[in-house]
Image (tube, rainbow, N blue to C red):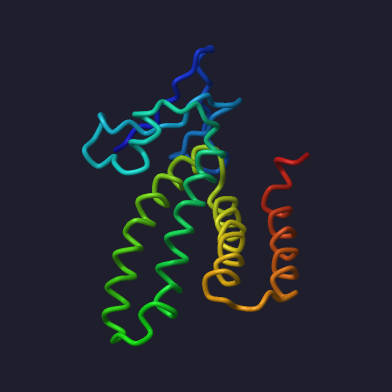
Length: 173
């Protein structure tokens, strides 16, 4: 199991259990460095190693969101770029190329969710993921796939803001 290290210059953070669960530690206060150390287990790699090696001081929510943005760029290309680039190839070729791109996506997505889950619920992570997906997809559709800009994207974004409010309202008050 990969341990999450919290490298701070201040006093150590108090770990408390999440309400209703007995398996996920939660942290109080801000965290100076969210990292998963690749030296603890051979399974820790990819984006996890970046934070450890570079020692980037970062709040776990910021780290998670940054990694999710990277993940979504790869995901969007894996899901939709074949419509433009490989539409003349057999579908199996497009599927294999998409799987290769999706592997890169997962190298960002898995650590993003592991880091984010230390301070956010699964529902909050999911809504954050959906907002990021729309934020990445709209420019991709307009600039890469040459789709027309529609007001539907605005309406979808406003619905997402409502979802964000409901999932994060306990943190807003």
